[in-house]
Length: 211
Ligand code: ATP
Ligand code: MG
Image: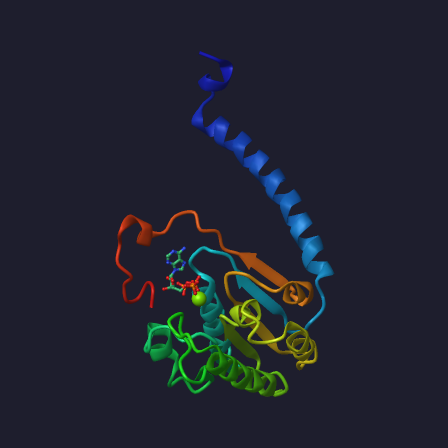
């Protein structure tokens, strides 16, 4: 038996305790230094992208966090999926949340490009209004990124509107891919990776999980 293994539990745990304390103290110093450096107070632009599940639910979870603090929020859904999702049912009557669904109900099934572009422009006009409205603290533009991918909207004016928004306003944009212009002006970008998904195991989309 090695000497180490013959130590009593008490001895081992006190050595462990010391090591742990030293490690944590140096970690705390690093974290404290970083916190001391982050002094700016302003709204941020967050991009939730990638092929994994969790982009919209993360955006709306963050919005719930804002609403919890009494902040005024709005959602624009640029692609209309299911008519009544759980999140829509949950937030629609919330006094601090305005929920907008893009015009005529664009879905993957629509094939009328002219109508889609018209609806995208209308939804973006609303987005621009919200981006000039100081009373909103948090805006979620769900699936906005597809509008640029399919060239329904131009990136440059959107970038400008986002840059000129009220300083305190937070914006979250979701979508699998993100235009370079958006990435350039974003403060936080999280890419959700698709490591595994129940759908590929044959599990049916279910209420409370998928919608
Ligand atoms: P969620 O709304 O659950 O956060 P999401 O916003 O990341 O998902 P979308 O690309 O908007 O994902 O897809 C919308 C729908 O497809 C949701 O019902 C979601 O659960 C489901 N989904 C997301 N990613 C995958 C995937 N990799 N494979 C199969 N279905 C997925
Ligand atoms: Mg989504």
